[in-house]
Amino acid sequence: MSRPPPWTVRPATADDIEAFEAVRIATWKACFRGIVSDEFLDGLTLPPHRIQRCRDVIEDTAGSAVLVARAGDRFIGMGMAEPASDACLESDVGEIRALYVHPDWQGRGVGRALLGALTKALRARGYRAAVLWTLRDLPPTRRFYEATGWDFDGAEGTHDWHGLVHLVRYARDLSEPS
Ligand SMILES: CC(C)(COP(=O)(O)OP(=O)(O)OC[C@H]1O[C@@H](n2cnc3c(N)ncnc32)[C@H](O)[C@@H]1OP(=O)(O)O)[C@@H](O)C(=O)NCCC(=O)NCCS
Image 1 (cartoon, helix red, strand yellow):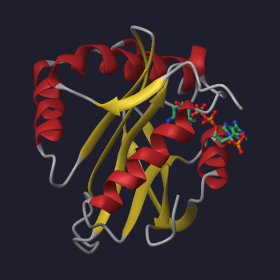
Image 2 (cartoon, protein in one colour):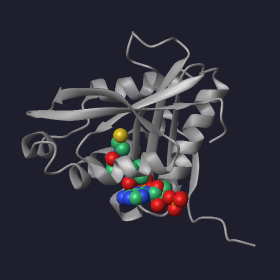
Image 3 (cartoon, protein in one colour):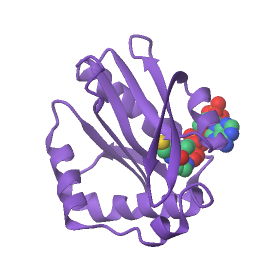
Image 4 (cartoon, protein in one colour):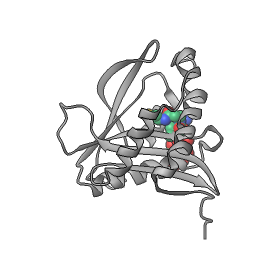
C-alpha cells in the first residue's frame, strides 16, 4: 500500500488568510522574477483590501472555493476558484484565480492535488467549464497545466505590474472527471 502524502488539502477559513497569502507572495517572488518587474515583486505586501477580498471569497461558499495545503502546521500551498471574471463568458464558467505551491514543496504533487480539488469544487457548484490565466513566458507552469488536463484556448492578454506582462488563458471542460 502506498503511503499517504505528508500534506493535506482542506477548505480555508478566515484565520488562514495571512498564512496562505504569505505562501502566495513568497511564490511570486521566487518564481516570477525576470518576468514580472523587480519593483513590483519587491513591493508585494498584504494590504487590508486584499485581506477583505480573501474573506469575501471564503464566505461565498455557493460560488467560490478557497483551499489550503498544509504539511504539519506549515502552510505550503493555496488555491482559489471563483465565477469567471470575464463578463463575455457564460455564467456557468468558473475560473481558477490563484494556485501557488511554496517553492520548497513544488514538484511533489501538491499543485495537482489542489487543482484537482478546485476543479471538483467548481463542478460541485454547477460550473460546466473553467478557465485560468497564467504567464505566457513561464514554461514550467504552462507544462503543469497541460499535464493536468488544461489547454491553451487562444486568448491572450497583458497586465501592468509596473511593466507589461503577457498572459495566456487555459480552459477545460468540467464534464470530464479530473
Ligand atoms: C504551478 C504549480 C502550482 C504546480 O504545483 P506543483 O506542486 O509544483 O506540481 P505537481 O508536483 O503537483 O505536478 C503535477 C504534474 O505536473 C507536472 N509538472 C509540474 N511541474 C512541471 C514542470 N515544470 N514541467 C513539466 N511538468 C511539470 C508534474 O510532472 C506532475 O505530473 P505527474 O503527476 O504526472 O507526475 C507550482 O509549481 C507553482 O506554484 N508554481 C509557481 C506559481 C505559478 O506559476 N502558479 C500558477 C499561477 S497561474
